[in-house]
Amino acid sequence: MRTDGTGVDGRIALIQSDIWIGFPRAEQVLARLQSLIEAPRQTRMPGLLVHGASGIGKTMIARNLSRRYAPEYDSELGITRTPLLLLQAPPAPDERRFYLHILAAVGAPAAALSLRAQSVASLEVRVVSLLRDLGLRMIMIDEVHNLLAGTHREQRRFLNVLRYLSNELEASLACFGVSEAVDAIRGDVQLARRLDEHHLPNWRDDAEFSDMIQTLIAAMPLEKKSNLKVKSLKQILAQTGGVTSRIFALVKDLSIDAIHSGEECITDDAIAKWTPVWSRHATHQRRLERAGG
Image 1: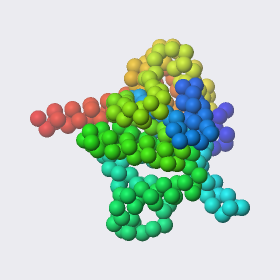
Image 2: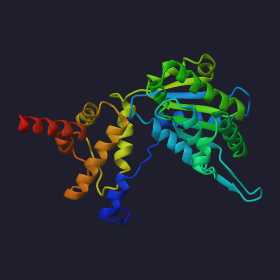
Image 3: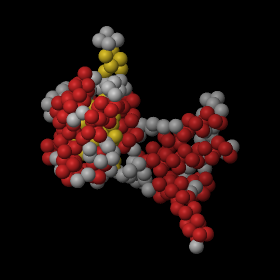
Image 4: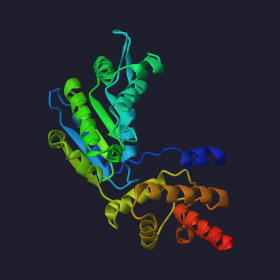
């Protein structure tokens, strides 16, 4: 029995919430990031670039580390310590927009209109001062591939900003993005030298994938154990393309169906009949087009 006395609605809400599964490949990245955030300060702080396909789990890892290093209020000094700042790169490499985003993220008290009226140089000084007071040790930039939306000149200027903040604050820099962002980061030789590259590949048909699936299913609040055949694991891999977010979506969908049906476990038959959401949308669109024709 796995429900722990929770009702149907409560169990479904639990399934639909963010679920962290500490599989080895994720823990490996977290361990590397933790070693960086705990490293002694220096002018040229080392960093990490984590890249892989969309939905492979980069943001999940970034958010998990952010929760581990949440801001803490120091009652003796009367200040809030913020060792880590997680930001999403702006849709395009815009310095002003990025600085305003940082100020909003740390809860800068100044009025938005007065901030927008300030020059980029003034915003830069304000950001550095605030982040230094927070005791920042790492800046994490998610969706760093967004910088590819800008011109080569704009990309270089944005990378210069990241390198400058890391230098001034003596803080490590961690970037997360799709693999296309690697070439853009390499456009700044000095920054690229500091960022080790860690690639998160799509899942493959191996023991690591099998262990991850079993751990994920075991985390679902179902009353019965799901005993799946090897064939079903291969089907999951084929249906999701080895993308973490799709694998999670599949297991969550089937878990909710198992609760509604009273089956209370994920079966081989359910996996064989499951249709991916992305396929359902495509099929529905084709039907609409045929009907319209």
